[in-house]
Length: 199
Image (tube, rainbow, N blue to C red; front, top):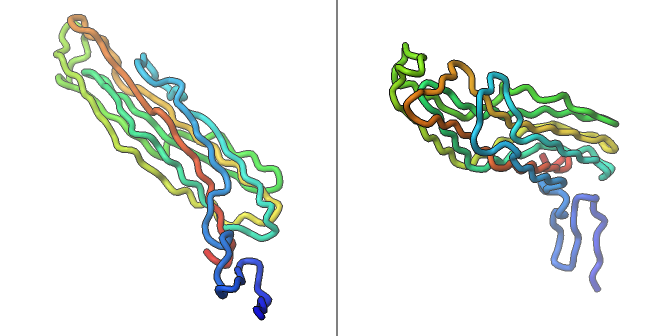
């Protein structure tokens, strides 16, 4: 005869013995896939232009406080900059938690990927520019955003933004075809949660 001992909610009692229940370990509780809407050729953008924008919500209905973190997965990125220009892809996020939270719109100052091509530093006149073009490819990357403890019956609201910008000088040369490009491709948001006692 097998007798199951009394165990807490985070434990598992079977005929094989005691173990931790699956929900005791960090688990993915929400997921969102976001695609870029501005990949390809770009033009003058002194202010950031949104490429990827989206948000994700999660409601803690477990009855227990949860330690929450968001993983931001970013696709491989690439830019093409031309003398004497700069192309930058900015990443940013913000979050709020509570009964009915609304996160602020992210500021594009947290993370960036890009490059600058400038063959003749003092020159910006189109007829005097020399040919120069810069290609940069970056690997896929991820960032962990710790949210903290989310009480039971509370929600998380997380916003994400990727935006392209061409700060500084913008001049099109007269003797060759100009080319500026940016490719952010996609981003994937994953919300991880684990009971407070196991963190």
